[in-house]
Image 1: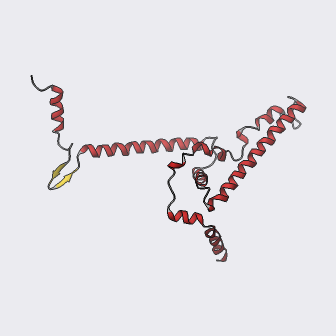
Image 2 (image 1 turned 180 degrees about the vertical axis):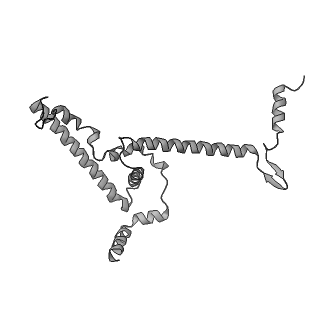
Image 3 (image 1 turned 90 degrees about the horizontal axis):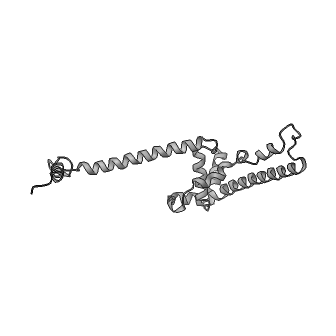
Length: 188
């Protein structure tokens, strides 16, 4: 019985020049397949990056997210490295801003309940629709710092966060760097 046709084709294809590593003029030349695999990985990486840019652009240009990409990257850095002395206070300030925003929302909600209890669904004093209008002001649309509240949506687990360089750890650990740079710029 002879060699099967599929084996013949496979053998013929394996003899195709350039598929395997070869020595040409004393130099080892890499075969086609390893270069092709790298090209596929590079292509898939580019596709992934393009998809992420499109996805991030869509998210950040939508009404749900009002901060710019740079702002998001700064917020996330403060979040992940909030234990560093230089980031501790800015992180606390952002947390307090969210607390203030929450308190405004709670005040609005309590006001809505008061209006519903006192006026029902009558027209408001300023000609507004009263209770219905006030109820709409309790939504996320009226939060000033909505981006800070939504930041946790985009955070990844801490074990995936790249570690800081030794130089950056030193810089972020010293409060004096901030004060000395301010003092030197004022004295000039």
